[in-house]
Image 1 (cartoon, rainbow, N blue to C red):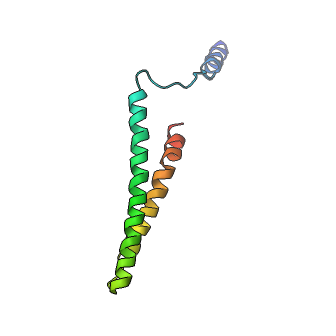
Image 2 (cartoon, rainbow, N blue to C red):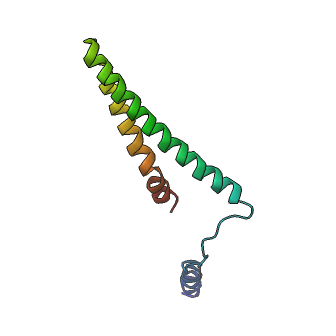
Image 3 (cartoon, rainbow, N blue to C red):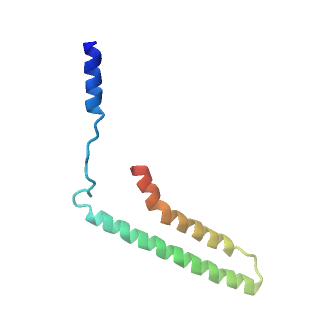
Length: 95
């Protein structure tokens, strides 16, 4: 009976949560700045892909060629959705 009580006490102590406030690692400001720059580059590339796809769509309609530009526009939109939700996905995975 004593062993059972000791085991329960040990489990009770180990089950208590440790409160650690979240804080960025030391000297991580450069890495965070690089991440912010990368997000701007990705957004800019997405806008450029949409503009390029729209221009190509107009050119293909004007010349009567095959329509390949909807694939470009759809790819840019899907990529934009993935890029926009990447932060939320990573936050849910990490925590």
